[in-house]
Image (cartoon, rainbow, N blue to C red; front, top):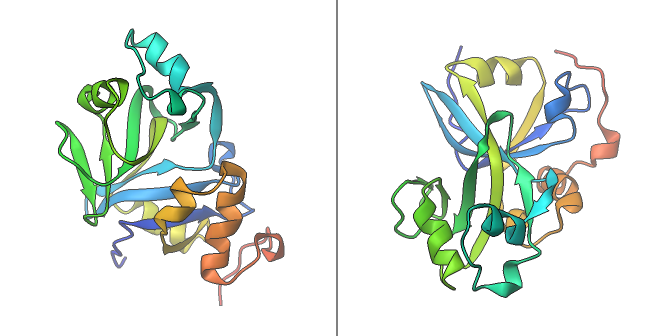
Length: 186
């Protein structure tokens, strides 16, 4: 099977997605190589906000404008761990730079900086991530489980969560409502 690099792309779950955890999701792929893929779901808010997170980790939140910012279900893997998708990339202890424009950071130093009034300009915090083993994502693409399109950071950082899936579909020039739940191959 041919390997494709979807780093920096959105994965759009097809209506026929069998795994309920991914139904109607938009996933941003942070890394995709011969070893597998890693991404975060960017349109599944949870009942927790930044104020709750900072209370839980026992740190003050100086950037009060972020207090009500929602956290997200980033995927079913490692759901007890925080993943900060942010722009610009910056210099944090544990950051995966995605195409040089976005970063995915898992180290606490980014939260400390945010708590002290600094941190990245734009961010989205998720609990958990989505992961695929080598060849798994390619197989799912071949089975028509996903559509992919080059990501636009504005969709992640400048749109409400409930509008992100449809916005990504517009990048493809397709209306999600017009997708069929039946998969087919030519």
